[in-house]
Length: 221
Ligand code: C5P
Image (tube, rainbow, N blue to C red; front, top):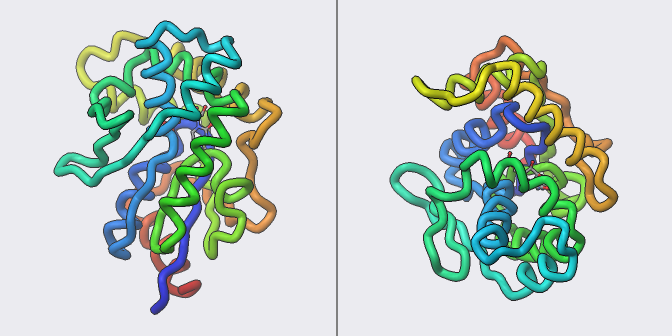
């Protein structure tokens, strides 16, 4: 079969990255976590003291920054200008600022450019917020993956383990705020593409969703 590109978009905590990673490994495709790229820019901005509302500072940072994703034994390794930032991009500090940084025009155009290069040879499963609508509008398969807010918060809560450091209610609020900012920004907001298939994962297993997307992908290839 010939190789296609698969776009998986949706709100925070819908299970996109887990699903996208498994779909990619089943099809022997490359998985691209675009949220990790925005997180890496955010981390570097914080480290260099560039404020999330410094429009020009962020844009010039992003223009000169190289973000690459490498396959690692325990998932994707994220490099920012060659430095491994994988362990630093999932902190609550980065999570709290990433939506503001991602609203920046210069940041978005640089990340979209890198993402299109990664997908140029096809055979990519890319997850994010604007992949089906902006980055890869010609992707052969587009999925918009969602789940109820409570279920999304619960999944994130369980991922945090024994010492979550937040309550379930707090997490649900943080997720809702991030989704609101991602949906209401001017450039490439979080939105279901008209030709994307809506999959609600509430109460369904990961394996079921992965099977569904793999079958659709094989049918589209
Ligand atoms: O997917 P994840 O939750 O790690 O994404 C972190 C943030 O990165 C999102 O809340 C959003 O602000 C931004 N993002 C984006 N466009 C994408 C992927 C992520 O703006 N394609």
